[in-house]
Amino acid sequence: MRKSLHPVVMIALVAAVTLAGRALPTWTLSLATIAASNALIALGIVVLARTGNVSFGQGLFFAAGGYGVALIANAWGLTDAVAQVIVGALCGGLLGLVVGPLIARYSGIFFGMLTLALSMVFYGALVKSTALGGSDGFNVGRPSLFGMSFTDPREADYMLYAISVIVTGFAGIAATILFRSEFGLASLAVRENNLRVEYLGLSANRIISINFLIAAIFAGASGAFALMAQRHIDPQFAYWTTSGEFVFVAVLAGNQSVAAVFVASMALELVRSFSNLYLPNTWQLVLGVFLLGVILFLPRGIGSLWIRDRRKRRISTTAHLTVERGAAP
Amino acid sequence: MNPVLSVRRLEKRFGAVVAADALTLDIPAGQKISLIGANGAGKTTFVNMVTGYLKPDSGTILLDGMDIGRHSPRSVARLGISRSFQIPQLFVELTAAENLTVAISGIGTRMSLRAPAETQGRRDKAVELLERFGLADLADRPISELAGGVRKLIDIAMALVRRPKLLLLDEPTSGVSAEEKFATMDRVIHAVAPEAATIVFVEHDMEIVSRYADRVVAFYQGRVLADGVPAEVLNNQEVRRYVTGGVR
Image 1 (tube, rainbow over the protein chains, first blue to last red):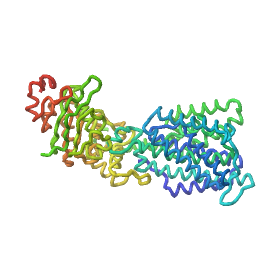
Image 2 (image 1 turned 180 degrees about the vertical axis):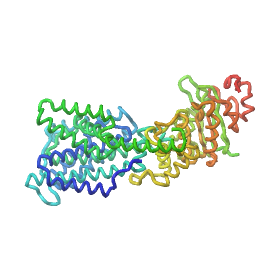
Image 3 (image 1 turned 120 degrees about the vertical axis):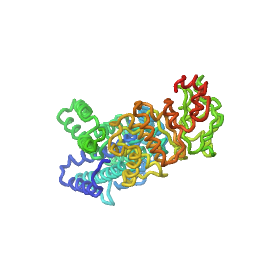
């Protein structure tokens, strides 16, 4: 089993990255906030992908979180950023609790297409709903933190950056613990052979449903971040291209490392920003070439850059021991 | 001796093909029983129905008196029936020890989302199981790097984790060379012995059957053609005609 950083070291890293935001230029704060938010939802996709299922419709939970927060903020005046993240996660989670068990019995392309279909049904309903602003959506107020309002744009950006880094960082720590747990190993087993998992007395559907719920919670919280960053919500949150972007990050990252999700999300935002700046008419082409490059040279994702070596080392050590003891290799 | 498994008038059809035709059979505790029959005779269908993968069209399957005919594979496994497969069903990207760790994790009622999968206790248990099959050296090797015969043994080791009352082995020596087949079966019998499980094994090799089985049940077109001690069944004229083709 792979070793990873101790949770205390990971907490220290999250604190360091949060404090480092003080020294970052303002433009990078919003970039990093978006990257952290996207990393959170992509992390959920990676959690789910460990069971062998990819959701092409995480926009459903992303939008559920965003709309849930926006409606409560406008109706009850809930502006606290931490409360909004919690509400977003709850909205995504509640929807995930309903949808997860229903689609857990499907796998592969059927699973992916069902999630996509559900998100597009939700998108259609949002577009047609005049009470929710139809295709234009609606605006929400500036978020506050523990009663403090931020009128200085840099301070407001830093507050959002700090919260997104802390929440995403802790989600990453939780995912690391989950990946190493009994449940995490059983999730990998489901991906490999769900029939055998059933014959061992475990429920593959239950394992998939719980992973789905975790992914939905992460997506809902991410929707809340996106809402706070834009202070506007519209049905685009649930559109398939939005979901596709999150899958893009997950594919870049691979499913072997939590850290890879953050690296992939940040790399994607940097490539997108710089290609948009220097090649405004062909930035999608640059993104496509970037993804192709990763798929060709790192088919198991960016995480394989450091995970692959560790695994090779372990295997070569075992082989060495086997030969020494005179057994067949 | 009380039967651990009783099957009564079991019926299963796949269109026009009759896989189980009023099949009635008792499996007493503690025996090693071999199921023989030509391809399509209904042996694997029988195993699949007993383990909950297929539901019978009619009839009952009683495990210690409880009807399990409509139970899922998960429920059947929890009640004490384990199986191995003709083609080993393993988690090929995981190591041998990790495969067994998944099986060991499944014994409890709830899996932890926090507790590490690989504890010293689980590791020791996994290695002890592999040791019984002479495979402890391969504990940290991914399944994808292991030979077919070794996979077969790990598949059986996985089935033993729950200490089953009834162990069903689907062709444990298929794909194993003629020189290795007795050694492989010796390993299996030796490894299973501490569990004192009742063993039912599907087998095509009559040398294996006559050497290891206490009792032989011959299937033909979903029915029991003959049932008794190996010498008696393997010399049965109908068995020689429809199952073994005169080969002993």
